Amino acid sequence: MAEIIEDGKVGGFADYNNRAFTGASVSRMPLKELPVIDVGPFAGNSSRTERESTARQLREACINIGFFYIAGHGIPQSELDELIEWGHRLFALPLEEKLNLGLNNQPGLTGYVRLGGNNSDGPKKTSDIKERFIMAREPIPGEPEAGNFAAGTTIWPKHPKLDAFADFMKAHIEKRSNLARRVVRAFARSLDLDEGFFDDMYRYLGATMLVNYYPSLTSGDVAENQWSFSPHTDYGMFTILAQDGIGGLQARNSTDEWIDVPPIDGTFVINIGDMFAMWTNGLYASSLHRAMNYSNAPRISVPMFTYPQGRTRISCLPTCQGPDNPARYEPVIAEDYNNMLVAQSHRTGRPGVSTETAKRFEGA
Image (cartoon, rainbow, N blue to C red; front, top):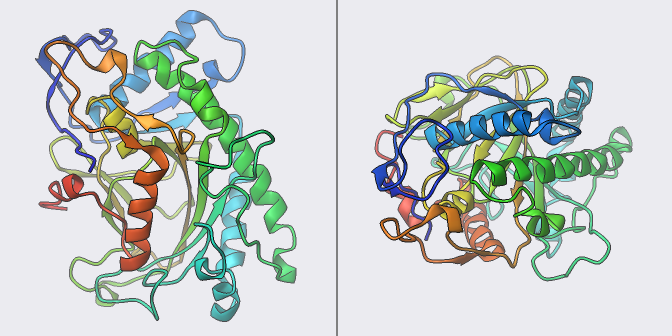
């Protein structure tokens, strides 16, 4: 299972943040708000100085909390607004029509998930109060079949009001996939690796995009320890999240304080997942996060979970270990680790949680 270290010894890292890493404990600052980082230097022509600056900012945010906003990503706010509107149209369909798009109707890991989870007749006292629609990217010519994270298996709605839904979502997933391929180069630089270190693994990246629908709630609607989206860590390398203007997302900082992650126009939220935390030997934080919608309107969020090609072996990176900092985690295969936790999520109606992540739930 994944074990995420909150505070441990690290060694062999470039000193981007004026911290002594070699043989010293990781110092994580308890952030009260998240930084906004311009990733534009990795999207086009830029100087080495500009790219180094972005890499330093990424590294600091990933060590402190593993959450940050990105600007300069090249996708206009008008497209993000349209994305949210498509989400509202989808979830306005009658339940019977949404169930026709369900995971049980196909062999892949995509489709509609009702309140209470996939294997459910409805919400339970412990299930999250949300609906979801899961989409995979389209297949890429020449990619291996094994490890493709269900590429090309999405069942698209055929309702007249959603006639352009599939075309819009396919194009948007492709744009976010290209963004992920640029951001992963910045991550490589932040770890003192060659910028192209992850390129082959992200050529056929795993890209799963979800539309989450959170109905409006009052405190009387919610049982004890029940959430719109209960506390969890993400499973993959990193997540690229679009959210509407309502808010309700929170992340837990290094002193176990929950801080708000409010929507900021023109940005995505990026957060580190379990695989990247394992890859970096616990240096980069896969932090707990949660959501509750106590507004007077339904909330939409659209995360895209990104992974290296599914048969990639996740083991400690060369710059994240040394004689005084041995690898802490058993290697895992990317798709196997993800599928185990996804299956758990569909059974319970709550996020899948590894054994070691569960140990961090005190006060969550």
